[in-house]
Length: 257
Image (cartoon, rainbow, N blue to C red; front, side, top):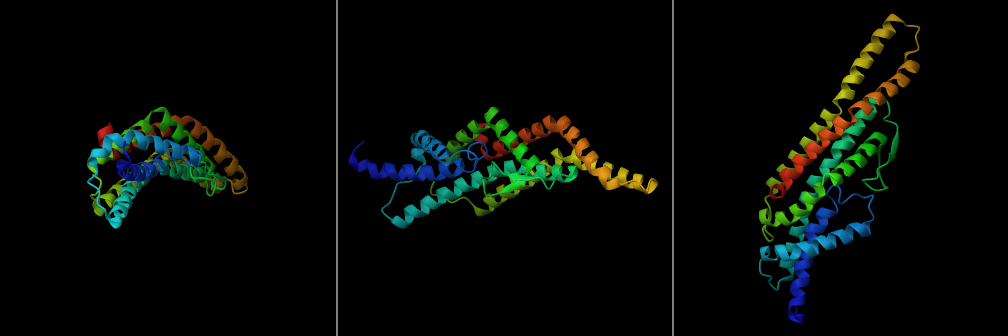
């Protein structure tokens, strides 16, 4: 490599890092806040070095305009942000399901620090447990490999220098968000049914025995029965999450399936 090629190589590296680094910081399994920022940065740099020879031909010839270079850099960051945010919606499945389960079990007041969202936010304890388990499943099922291959494949579908239609990006975000919410409700449906039946039974019991202290009986019984149901259906819940995560990854990165 001669000195004359160094500026072009540096600009190519910066453009690839803008898309790859943004996706690494957001995608599930790769961009979890529980991992040190230095580790995620080193991972993004290594993926950029590996992807650079493969995607170099996708970039248009560079001009001398500074504004054109900055526009291209911002477009690459927006493309990475779009893919990364759509992938981040996958983890919202477990957080939403955890909130629903906590409410139906009477544990909505148990809030802990969210390990996947950094130390600045809190979430339901059950949701945090499900999120950590979901990250483990994503890594153990090698879905992060699909994401890494999808980063390179994204240069075929979204060529650098061509802004993606804003309507398509909005449609992608709405599709993933609505699918994630529907999946969260589906995997928490046993607890919704349990809470409905349990509360109806308590209402009938309170009418039959008005002198019974329903509140002191209901809370321990709800937590105990809810915990037993949680133990029984946890495997099915995570299986449903993993199937939906695989489907969303297939929609985001169709060339990596």
